[in-house]
Amino acid sequence: MVDNRKEQERDELHRTIWNMANDLRGSVDGWDFKQYVLGMLFYRYISENFTNYVNEGESEAGNPDFDYTKLLDEDAEQAREDLIQSKGYFILPSELFCNVREQASGNENLNETLETVFRNIEASAQSRESEKNFKGLFDDIDVNSNKLGGTVSKRNEKLVKLLNGVGDMKLGSYKENTIDAFGDAYEFLMGMYASNAGKSGGEYYTPQEVSELLTKITVLGKKEVNKVYDPACGSGSLLLKFAKILGKDNVRQGFFGQEINITTYNLCRMNMWLHDIEYTDFNIGHGDTLTEPLHWDDEPFEAIVSNPPYSIKWEGNADPVLVNDERFSPAGVLAPKSKADLAFIMHSLSWLATNGTAAIVCFPGVMYRGAAEQKIRKYLIDNNYVECIIQMPGNLFFGTSIATCIMVLKKNKIENNTLFIDASKECVKVTNNNKLTEENIQNILTAYKERADKEYYASVVPNNKIADNSYNLSVSSYVEQEDTREKIDIKKLNKEIKEIVTREEVLRMEIDRIIAEIEKES
Image (cartoon, rainbow, N blue to C red; front, side, top):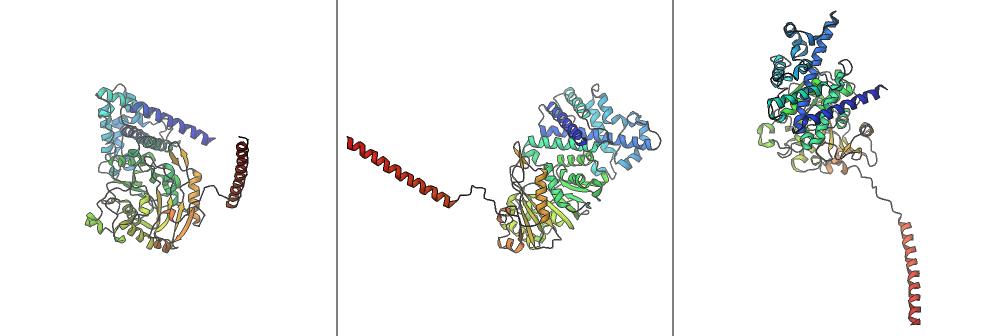
């Protein structure tokens, strides 16, 4: 019964978000406007999170009726240092979401007020340990943008609607799974806009079911891991699956990732906060992972998951530094300049702990193309690093119909072979996309865990056989496709043909007889 109520609440929340987003979006492109909705959701979250932290502290100190939202700013200032030490940031009572919203409709300078509030929140973390997780977080919420309206009054009108829309979301009280509600609202918004934004959205968002499969592969048989990492983390949905599946406290040393797109980098950090990951427990960097990796001091990682961009260009062997980079040099060759896919694989392998697992979504071409990519596959197979290749269905990801693969890497394999799984039919059709169900995910995990031959589904292949096949890693080369065409009984067919021929002969003789009689009469 509790689950039904939770589902009803979730559906209601989704309807509220959908209606609000469509009402507010207007002429603003959906994918751009998402940033405003998510930014305001984040502003509400950290305001409520901060307020509840202070109120609970006061209640434990014997002051149960204390309410930070009603406190004067000058009185709150006295606790600024202590609160920044514990929470990583500080918000004055007058600058809390609820108080700014209450005054919003009558505030002719609402845009300036919000700009000041966002700047003050970021400034509170300046020169602190939490600065890297706060700096620039509100940069994409431009309250003076023409996207919101051509005049200040029009923009403020939209901002009031935005504050009220986010404020009216039923996200529950902080003690009643607020984190789930905030996180769920974020994920719904990301999915909604990604599915409507085509490629521009799909680049940054991995469907939750795919995230779940990747995460469960990397933690199979484990109840905790030391650190999790995503070298192309997007909005962080893959990393946060570990918090849902294991529990955030069972990711002992935190969540690490790097993202090249500044907007998505900001969304990822917001997402960490919205899922109640403390600032001390996540480290998300901004930049190009392949040429400027930011987590040298944090590797190796016990669990690595990623859905890196497909076949993007990179500097490759045009940069002599990369040629000698310890992440790439063991293969003796760099991924092609026009296709960086295997560079992400080599990077992940390099930073994988000896007891760890990496599960990475790959463009199918990397499994069979020749030249440098073939040499990298040779390195991976000859050193027995490839645990499994899984062929996924097409149309799983927003913005692309490509049937991707998953490459699973390990450094501590015992058997010198590779598992191939054909999961191309493990899906159900939902509108224009395919989707993994719980049953589909479980089927794949069972085959991965059992690591045994299964007709038309899984095959364990000795690595020397892969070498003989030019290091081709396409699943179709090793798992036979089931012939679903109708089986034909040749003997039965021949008998039927013989009967037809006999009937034809009888019929022809009868026709000849009739014609002969007609000719005779004439």
